Each structure stands twice: as C-alpha cells, then as structure tokens.
Amino acid sequence: MSSFLTYTAIVLVASPGLAAGISGGIGRLPAMGWNSWNEYACDISEGVFLETGELMVSLGLRDLGYEYVNIDDCWSDKEKRRDEETKRIVVDSEKFPRGISHVADEIHKLGLKVGIYSDAGTLTCGGYEGSLGYEDIDAATWAEWGIDYLKYDNCNVPPEWADEYPYDPALTSNPVPPRGYDYARSNTSVRFSRMRDALQRQSQPIQYSLCVWGHAHVERWGHETGHSWRMWGDILPQWAGRAGFSWGIMPIVNQAARHWEDSSFWGHNDWDMLEVGNGDLTFEENRSHFALWAALKSPLIIGTPLKGIDEKVLGILSNKELIDFNQDTHYSDSARPFGLEGPVPPTADNTAHPPSHWVGISVKGIHVFLLNTGAEEAVLAVEFDRTPGLNKQRVYLVHDMWTGEDLGVFLDGFALSVKAHDTAALRFTTPQGNHPDANWAPREPRRSEGGD
Ligand SMILES: *[C@@H]1O[C@H](CO)[C@@H](O)[C@H](O)[C@H]1NC(C)=O
Ligand SMILES: *[C@@H]1O[C@H](CO)[C@@H](O)[C@H](O)[C@H]1NC(C)=O
Image (cartoon, rainbow, N blue to C red; front, side):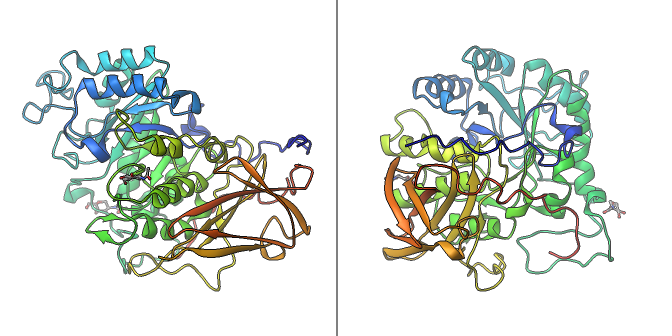
C-alpha cells in the first residue's frame, strides 16, 4: 500500500495560545498512564507503584506512550494530616517508608513520570487531608518531590465555597443563572484556579487533571484552568446503569456524545480512568470501552493491576492504531456521533443509550467507530454519502484497526456484523491508501455559551 502521508501538511492551528497560560508545554495530547484507584483504592504502598512502573516498561506499555504512574487517594497520614510547623501534608510512613520522593526517583529512572492526588476541599473523598487553603504549600511540596501530574478531586467543599448557581450535569434540573452568567467566575472555578496558579509558580511543569465531575460547566473554563477535566461521575466496571454517583460505560458514552466539541489540543474531556480488565465486562465490552475512550480523546489511564494481566486485556490496551488515533498530533478533534435522528437525549435519566455511529479524522484517514449497543449481534452499516468526511467520494479502502488488516475496497458503503456490545474500529482511505479528505473537520472548540 502506498504512503498515507502524501497530502498537504495540516498546520497546527487548533487555537494557538488557547491554553498557553497553563500548558507549560505539556498536556497537548490526552494523558496516558496508570492509576491505582480503580483496583487498589486505599490499599496502596510504594511497592505497588514501583512494581507497576517496572511492568509498564517490561510489558511494552511505556513504549506505546503510557507515561504516568499515578498515586491516587490515601497516600497521606490520616491522623497527623499536616506538620504543625511547616503545614506540609504528612506522608503515610507505613505505605511509603522512604517517602513519595523515593517513589518519584525510582519511577523517573524507568523513563516514566509520577502523579499524585489531592482535593479542592478540606478533605479528600477518602477523608484524607485536602489542599483548599494550602495550595502553595502543597504544590511546592509536590514539586520538591518530583511530581509530574496532579489529579485534583472535588469532595468536602466547605459551605462558604458553595456556588451561587451550582450546576451538576447528572441532575435533571439545576438553578438557572441570569442570562450571560459566566461559570468561570463560580466558586468551583476559583477553587480549581487557585491550584492552577500554585502549580504554575513551581519551576517544573505539573500536568493538571481536574476531577470536577462536570460541575459548574467545567467544559467552559477547563481550557484556561487545567489540561483535562472530568466531565461526569465515577466510572464503574459494568456496561450500563448507575450506582449512586458512579456509572457504567454506556451512560458515560451517551454523555460524551453531547460534549464531543469540548476537547481540543491542550485541553481534554476526561471520561474517567479505564476499567478495561476490571469487574465483569465481557471481551467485547472491554474492547468497546477502550476504543471509545481512544476515539473520544479522553486520557487513557489504565486502572487494572499489571501484575498477571490477561494477555487479551493487555492486547486491547496495547492497540497501537487506537492509541495513534487518540494521540494524533495533527488533529485534536474527538470522534463525533453522526446519523442521529435528533439530539442526543440527556444522560441523567439513565434510560438513554449512546449513538452507535461515530466518525473522526487522523493523519491516516477517516475513522468510523460502530458501537453495537444491543444485546444481539447486529449488522452495522456505513453509507458513504451519509457519513461526514466520506461523502465526497464513492470508493474507499476499508481497514480494521483491531486486526490491522485491510478488508477490501468498497463502493458506496460498507457493512459488517458486530457482536453484542462490541465496537468495530475502521479506517477509510482512498483505494491507493491515501488520505480521503485531509481538510475535513478542523473546528474551534465550543466556548462559553448559554444553555446546556
Ligand atoms: C461564593 O461563595 C459565597 C459564600 O457562600 C457566595 O456568597 C457567593 O455568591 C459565591 N460566589 C459565586 C460566584 O458562586
Ligand atoms: C475484560 O475484563 C474483564 C473484567 O472486566 C475480564 O474478566 C475479562 O476476562 C476481560 N475480557 C477478556 C480478556 O476477554
């Protein structure tokens, strides 16, 4: 097959300077790494992170771009909280007998980076010390330890920091602010901006991941505040449904369908850490989860233990073509749903299921993701004249991103059978393997605007 790269180079124009204030030269693409929370919760120790770092190298994950080894909640001393004199957070000396800086040093020696966790409230979600009011001290402490990434949560906000017009996307109704109200001025935005400012005062860049659950319309001010922002409640390792604050894969994807325009270079919607390999997902559900998170340009943060990882799970997480889509350096757009009869229904009612047809662009071609939301195997079709990016020509070479095989050259359309809850990941090029439409799709991210 001839070169995919014979088209005119696309200038890197996706809003230069959009997040120049916060980028620090990092976070242009979605973060990739590993985080302890989904499977270890509070049962962490230095050994977990050192072993994970080594496995990220030996399993080839580092070389695929997985970069961060992230410590989540419960790393500090729940009783001592802060040092009385320095006011620094006290590290749990049983879990981390040689300190967090030792973990950071060892992880750095592996050519990886290290992340930590805190909270824009008085306590973390697990009831450990939070950073509200101590932003400068904590940012300086982490910088001194060599921390490269902060996940900043949103629990235990004191009443004096409540928003005048709170907005929670998971509620069916929220107070209506006056016309033109700017959520960037909300107390939620101020709490997260304080840590941004503290991080920026450090001499090394620290990637800033806002774990703000879509509150206060973070998608409208996230670009000025962090490198990524959580858009919804916590993920559960299950296909559908919800349990309180946590949701299965399908409702999260449904919500993502309503917000595909909000990600761009330097700033990404975060649909939460991966559950691939956790809980009771089927093989097909694991595949869909990974393919869709890649397609949505969400950070790809592995949440499953790497020790003894199932070969097929590792294979999913190592799919180079999906990773390449997620990490494309020319196109920042999330895949978008298409072919819908009407608007994507609200997710909060928990009955909606997400769109089946998604399309996106990379340097290699136009990509279509076909999600079978049904409980039976089904034939899903791509009609070229109805597919954005494909509607100008009639003949395409179709390539399967899961197997790496070309499936053939097709006229007017392509259809294939997709197993229940599986997602086909396809790439379309000209029959010669060239990019079909390198000018399709670039657009500015949606910024402040009224309504939902
Ligand atoms: C911030 O919190 C204070 C105290 O609760 C409140 O009076 C104020 O209206 C809040 N500001 C915004 C912009 O929500
Ligand atoms: C997908 O992950 C689940 C856990 O969610 C695991 O039990 C299952 O074996 C995985 N599927 C595979 C590799 O087929």
